[in-house]
Amino acid sequence: MTDTGTERQGIGRRGFMTGTAAAAVGLGAGAAKAADPGAGFTYEVTRSEAEWRAMLTKDEFHILRMGGTEAPQSSPLWKENRPGTYCCKGCDLTIYRSLHKLKLDKGWAFFRHSYPDTVLTDLDLMGGRMGDPFAEIRAAMEVHCRRCGSHLGHIVSLPEVPDRPIHCINGAALRFEEASA
Image (cartoon, rainbow, N blue to C red):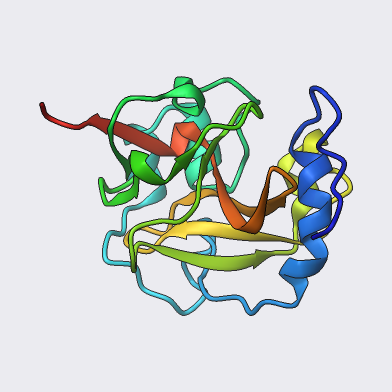
């Protein structure tokens, strides 16, 4: 595994994503970007930009439709511990289970994997467009909802989870549904 420097207290996504960028370059791109609907892939749920803007907050639109990244610890879902499921905020597709959620003190929601056939990945070659935390990133593996194409987050490798890459997901891209008793 690549040492990404995450052992330092308070390091942001840039530190651990830098180590995954090289691995991402070797993987194939599988989906069109949410912000690029003309890329030859048709999603089950499609909306006009005006419809997306009407249903999402400004921050949610920036994350889900423009591929942005929320600030660490800005969503309460990063520390959500109750049993339940996590759905795409763009189309309500159930994507993650709390059973597969990892408790990492990084400020984002981490999952070992998604439900089968719920996400698509894409090679994000525009790392710098996401703002300062990613200024040095040139490529990363992006995760999209397979139903509506909304950007969810990225696939990363961390020393704390050496056995596999994990999903680092923006809480603003998800809606949590607590399991019924």
